[in-house]
Length: 107
Image (tube, rainbow, N blue to C red; front, side, top):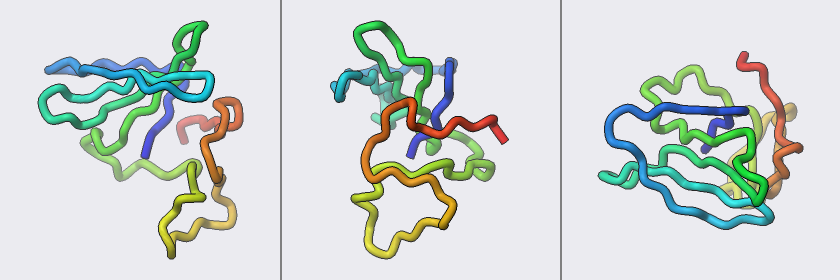
């Protein structure tokens, strides 16, 4: 699960995260995690031109997730049997290109 933030900048209090780089298809991600417990915190995508204008925060790191609602579902070709989606859900069988991702106004 990830919460995408366009032009996202975050500040981490306390222990600063460590990261590793994961290569992708034409873009890569710096995957930030807690160096003490290993919990993934967020991903910053980048390519040869620099950082892409969004990051993906792992919502399990938030104190309160009651306000979160899925905006789209990605990699649904691997959904567990019995998982269903609402008729109006935005669904991608695989990883969409950044420009294909829905844009939300924070509501």
